[in-house]
Image (cartoon, rainbow, N blue to C red):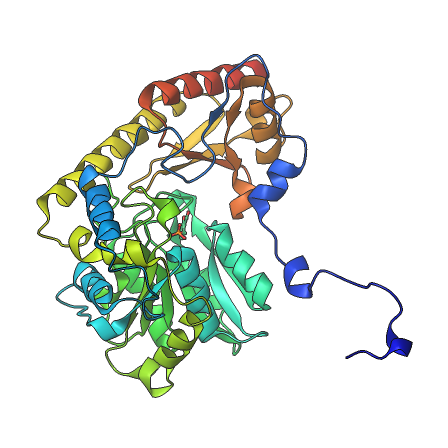
Length: 416
Ligand SMILES: Cc1ncc(COP(=O)(O)O)c(C=O)c1O
């Protein structure tokens, strides 16, 4: 207890951890400049939540399974912090490939892919170490690293090469404090899906420098046309990999908050240093994700479940149509250069500010577009990429068409 003489009144300060935590999207929205035109209905194409418009829905069979398990009364207690064994086994079977086998022991559940990413980062890094992150990239990586005091070095993704990593740049950043390379494939915000050859190039850098990889594969399987998703762990027998997944995007249920880490450690490199133990201990902080959602994983992740396979196919087809529509319309707008997506639900669009009389950068573009046309897109600088903006193309096609016509009008109104 404090004695009377040291008490000088209330002195409650926010912690350093809190004050070093930023959410760039929130900051932007709260800046006060982001106001829609009151005479036009708002079309948000900003947040990576497929549920915003109600047109993309999880298949009924998934809901039925959840309801059945609620009514069974069997899933009301605490699961083990790393997840129910049946859920972990289901994830292992769902994520493994012939060249990257998994067992129940290799899987740890978390509160969304976000929670899994936090656990993976904290298992591998100490304050003062650094990590290589993609630029542009999903802002949560930076947010967690800043919160924990992990150093960040950004490697460039190249728009001219369908957002492949600049391998030379990636290699040049590595120093003796570098502990891990993080990749995100398929990518938010780029919509890119890496080829086998490119993943092998990244693996070579990791291998040459003895660096493990955290591979954020939350958009696994969400690909269009001929693009094929390869789990990076399926292409190596030597580099230790923590691959991150979850149900948020593929099942269109981001609110359900279940994600996972798959530990690919075939030469026992993680095991030799008890990284599995570190991940387990970190999972104990919040005792794992929701028991009911875990309980349905054996049914919904069963690769022989035809209803689910059809649902995946239908969702991808819808997103692919939306992606094509986006590129078709916006590629004809002077001053805009959309880079075709091969998967996910995102589209990056380049802005050629030399074509506009009064738009100097992506922030100004996004603010004025919202102020004038009530279409909300996120500036690329939020993801580390100036002079681009990101579209989420989950809205119904007619809404997207309306939004793209407004973007066209907006660009015409601001042409030089
Ligand atoms: C690349 C990436 N990783 C992880 C996440 C977080 O997923 P979850 O909702 O499962 O936490 C997102 C969500 O937008 C994402 O885009």
